[in-house]
Amino acid sequence: MKLIVHPGHSKCGSTTIQKAIIKNRNLLESHDIIVPDPQMRTPGDDGFNPGGETPRAFFRHAMEQKDLAPLNTALRRLKKKYGHTSKTVLISAENLVNQLASPAGLNIHRLVRDTFDSHEVIYYIRRQDQFIMSAWQQWGYKKGLTLEAFVSQALKNRNPNYRVIASAFSNLYGKDNVTVVPLLRGSLFEGDLVSDFFARLGIKNGVQKPVDSTDNKSLNPYLCDALSKVNHIFHDIHDETIKHQLEQYASGHPGLYRRNDEYLSSASRQRILKEYAKDNQFISDNFIGNDDWCMYQGSSASSSSDSLSEALDVMTLTFSKIMSKDC
Image (cartoon, rainbow, N blue to C red; front, side, top):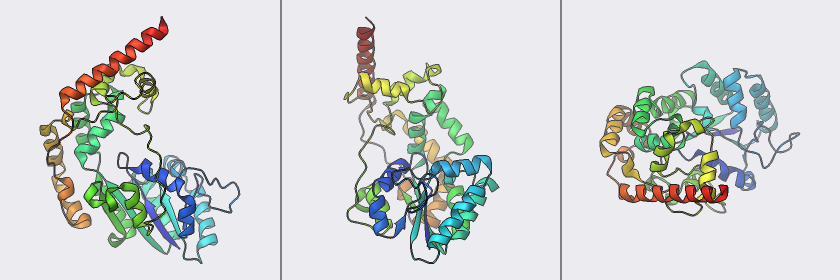
């Protein structure tokens, strides 16, 4: 019985991969790959939910409560059911990158590892300057932080810390069993994340792609900056109410999700990559084999003036519709 772990990482395509896993559960099973449901149940178990998400919540509970009993029970059930077979169990949960420097995270992986005969870890990463900007556009502005303040906070907290995570997986599962994949078109099979992930599972045909959604799309950075100044309107960093309202009032406007890589200055990008230079060299030397993935070459994305103008259009359109509705 083999284990494949996709530990994911926030802002590194985890949601897209998990949606694809759920959409292709039957295809995976036809290739002897079993996907546990949110409670770590598998086909044939009482209460198994074939349309359920991957078991992120299950691992979050184990980590937060420091209670491994339910996981131990689930793993014993898996061992009894599939231990004598050549089937593969696929576990995808981005919180499996958490607390890898403490027993709370390590003990979960040790328990999972020791249940299986062989292991494979598929870990996608994103260049740190891209990660930090995207993280600000999803969470940071809701804290009232400017992008530059969020950059400083991220560097102080060493987030993301791919080196620590990749090294922990290497120690836990064996270096030869850990694949680190940078999110670059040239590094991905057919230049596509879903195609790449399934190809690494040995499946290149019949994969259904998940429908693109706005759930993880980043708002125009100028909108994020404006909203950061009134961040009291958010209940917490996961509150998407305002985003959904903007979608309602400015639906289809190209400026709503306009990408603008220039919003994070070249100087800030260089500062970030300089801070991570030693870590990135370690990752390149030990896991990837080249350092193309961590080089910044500039961007040909839309100009800041276009992005700002469109953000103003979105805000004007939203304001006018709200006023019209109130009147």
